Structures are given as structure tokens and as C-alpha cells.
Image (cartoon, rainbow, N blue to C red; front, top):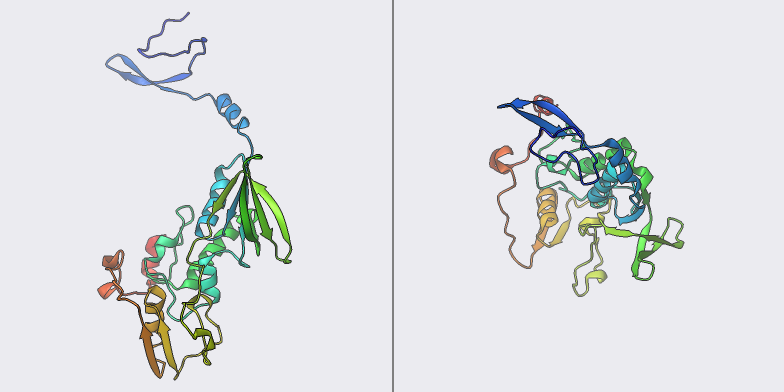
Length: 287
């Protein structure tokens, strides 16, 4: 047997020799690195058992999951059920029910995927429909529709301990329910798209227009009207500033004061942390 010139093991107890390539020498000692056998890698993947994964929601998390499975999920069968008629989840509903002042409150670039950055953001804090369009384009660009079923609502999910499977009840676009099963069940539905009316006595007996920012009526006009806003979260603050110049009178009821911190990455925003539109010169720097 050939003598081992290296001060480390070069074969295992069964005599299997670890392939090496010599890179050079330092002080008469060889510098080597191991060459991982390709055939071993192929055998490893062949032994992976198929896994069926079902996820709720085709928003940011769902789209990212679909891309990861497409790139690296060699043994994964993925289905994403999305109850809305399009992808984007929260940003889809925000686009369709675009309330006045709707936009992100952190720099737009934080909403992009590292594997497909958007190089033409129009503003530092972009409007909701711009963000939604970016996510929809991702699905089209990378052909992620193969994993996504829109207008499918997961009604129930239970773990079957005997079969070691998740049992799901799903309602399709035709209104009919069917069952599905999987090994791994993920919830990427988020919470910002789950809205409800506040518990205010007499709220639904109000005779005027009653609307929620999560389902803003497209035909609603507040010009020269008296408007009352309940709540002082992000949506309440945005809509107040947007409609104040055009309404006749505005009332704003809040339960407790809102503490607004300095904006994230404020030093890169406009004066006082304000929004601004990117110039063509600035956009070129992104390329």
C-alpha cells in the first residue's frame, strides 16, 4: 500500500480512499483539499423519501417558499392554497381595496426578495399597489404558478396520528369542499389580512357610509363630507393625513396615544424622514 505522506487520515477503516488534490506546499508540507465524490452525493439524494407539503397563503412567505422548493426541493411536492383570486395576500387586498394613503412605512427595498431585486422602485416609501405588482411579477417570472392554487380556502386541518399525516378540508372556487393530506403543513397566511369590525354598540345601525380600511370601497368619495376615524394604528394615521385636505370635517377617536418611533433608515429618507421619489439618476445607481 502506498505510504500516506499526509499527517491526516486519507482512507477509512474499509480501505476506501478519500480523493484529494494537491494545491501546493508550505514548508515542505503538501496543501491538499478533499474532493467530495459525486457518486456519493447522487446516492444520498436518491434515498430521500418524497415529502408532500401544503402551505396556506401565497403572500411574501408563500412565494419565497415556492421559489426555494423550485430551486432545491428535489424530493418535495408542494401545494399552496390561497383563498384570494390572486397572489400577494395582504398586499393583494390592499391593492384591491386601496384606501387613501396606503403605502409601506419602511423603505421599499425591504419588500424585495434577494433572489430577484426590484431596481426601479418609484419612491422611498412605495404605494401598496406597486408592492403587490412586484410580487405578482415574481410568480410570473419564475413560473411559480405550478405550486399555487388561488381561490382555495383551507377550512380545517387535523393531524392523523395513525397515518402520520395532516388531513385538510379545502373549499375550491366552485364552492365544493374536498379533502387533501400532507406530511408537512405550513401556515403562511399572516395576520394583517384578517380584519374585523370593532365592538362598538350600534355600529352597524349607522345610516351613513361604513367602511373598513382592509376592504375600502373603490367608489367611495369623502370630499366635503364629515368623516369619523376609529383607531390610530398605521392605517388610521395614513388615512387621516390623506383625506384631511378634502373632507368637510374630521373626527378621530383613539383609545390610547400612539408612540411613533423614528423611521427605519430615516437617515436615507427625505428631510425629517419624509418620503421622496427616486430620480432617474438614482434608479440607475441600483443597476
